[in-house]
Image (cartoon, rainbow, N blue to C red; front, side, top):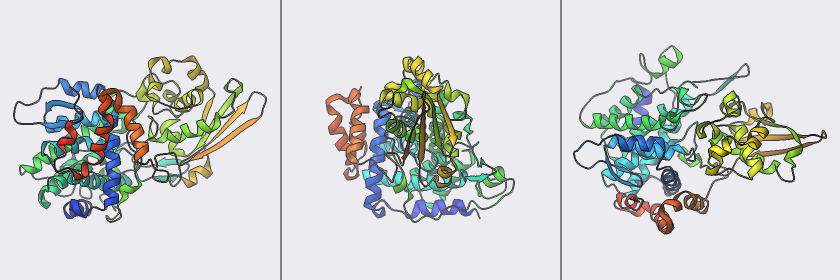
Length: 455
């Protein structure tokens, strides 16, 4: 018996919307509102433009598309929504990924079925719990001989697909057999390569998890109509563990019980989660600093942060926003020069700016063993600026705004919502925010989604 598959299935079918604690519902409400803000600001992203050109099947009502009255199939609506949520890299962060990518698919399905708001929010909560546990296993970090040894070749879309299927199964009240099949099919066909986010990043980086959510919706549809799935996708012969470790074995999933979603975070700045701490360190370092007299800046941090955002040559010469928002040297240089990072930090003019490029050349990223020993419990950077006269300026920053130890509250999220949504909804922005924040009380969540439509 595949214990991991049984654990996920048991949890998904046992939780009822009314039994999800109110503090969990409040937390996922903030994630939902943050996610639709990210989507509304990226309505013209490459993934959305491509999805809009793919014809919908001419039958029935399709899935809900954020901010649009377009008719799309359920799986394409999931892809479309997720592309928008993900594009700006401004959405949430949790256990090695961005589970709010899942929300695009849940919106597509919940809107099409006109589900109650609490049921939709509990679907998000279920998804996050599954995502967290799969991510812990598939990205099980160990430090051997000074190197990270884990499943870095497999992208977060693996966990996204499985968690999306669980969330949909919960929202639509699948029985145990259908839930088990939906999760199994999503796992069996959900091993995307992390090549999507290596080197000079392409448009696909922004839609990789969108492809995973689309696949999960299709898996759920197959399960609904009676297709059966593999019995042991995780722990059996040729299952996930055997593929990754050479021998079948247990996933050893963290038991369900404590609501891990409460430890998820949001992004205060539009940059990869790994680089958020770099912005805060730069803001502290720039106080009273004469950048013209800086000869070198060293960012001392964890091995993971260096590996992900400060180890490849492309990170010192970004030519696309997809690479720039994953580049610690770029993020830090912009923050030092401009006092922050905004969506306008990724224009072609900024990417080619001689000032930014010149400052980046002075930046080094090194592993600090003390910081490494405290990661991931504490996210830190110690930034040192060496001046032309030999003097040194040093600051330390930890736990950036938006992490669960330093969370963004409703007002923080509202400010971000206004920044992202007001250019689209103008005077309706605040009323839409209030409606979205109160979706838990809605008997039909599509009524809330309808308020986002702009054409």
